[in-house]
Length: 252
Image (tube, rainbow, N blue to C red):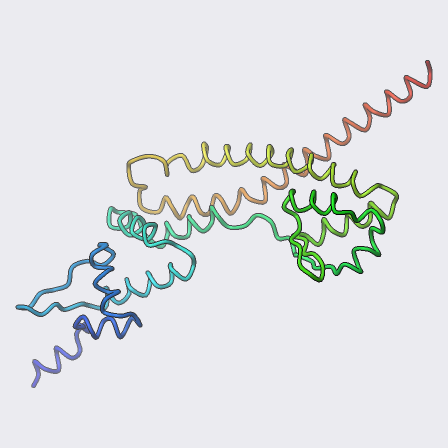
């Protein structure tokens, strides 16, 4: 009796059907995960395979990662890295930090009537096609959706000040090109100076992934601050140079 009670108080074990049911998957899926080496081997007792609570935790982690958009191939790599001494949870956190969105723009939808009221006869097929090409809008039957309320509001305000919509879109296209170039500078900086270890063949030492995640969290606002300050300083230089040139021409 004591032996039975001791066994009942110990870690729970599952047969394959029981583990699949506890994880909310089919036995076929469970066996597929085993074939992909996403699960460690079970404990064998004769012809019976016994799985433990660690197997259930692993299946729950796989389900969570799949929900978050990770592929089975990527999960296999993460698990393999964890079993080589790197912590899987830390690696997941680092991966999420790397691909997390930088922008916090709010999309805005406008009907064709609202667009006509804002832009009048400047709203042509040509400017609509240019906005589509720049990737800022998607077109529906009843209007458009712009990826950024701030950019859309700025466009409407500039047109209201007398700047032609076509000129705004031309400036937008050039600004996007320069912004991509600035972004590439920061991507290269972060890749080469902070994340270079990820390209190596040696596994990251314990805790390194968590440290890199914290670094990325701190660097993000710094990058935006540098870009904003550099733009403001550049505007100062260009405006003064332009003003000096206008004064020089008037004197001659």
